[in-house]
Length: 183
Image (cartoon, rainbow, N blue to C red):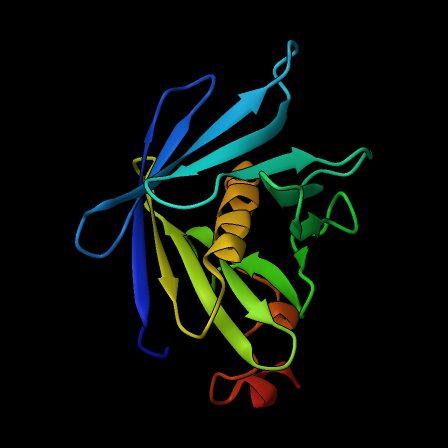
């Protein structure tokens, strides 16, 4: 696995409307991601309030599929969206204006997701401990922080689905021997 260029951590508090505090590698607070639910308990969105900078809005898009969210700035600028193509698929597609990404479960047993670019492979990893609610976000290649937040938010909604080992189709293509083991 390549060396991480940036590492972030999260602390989660609250149960019904959790608040995810994002910390940088030195433990300094970057901002808070607050999840919103409707009257029946379904997650309808979230809001990220950074210590400095623009507030981001996560909104559930109309549709029947889970993980169908979009990311907007306060100025109504679209930054990205996510969609899961099927109910039983464990891959979540993330779309931005520049390129598509996929969220796939981590290799082996463990809770968390890997963010994979279509052509370049592993970009980031979101690892959750077996016990506890925080996470470690490791960035391996250039990635917009907003897109990392979208992946983290959507990934936390389907966290239990990421515990089983991943399928061969989701293996990182940049790993040595990945093509040989898939054939």
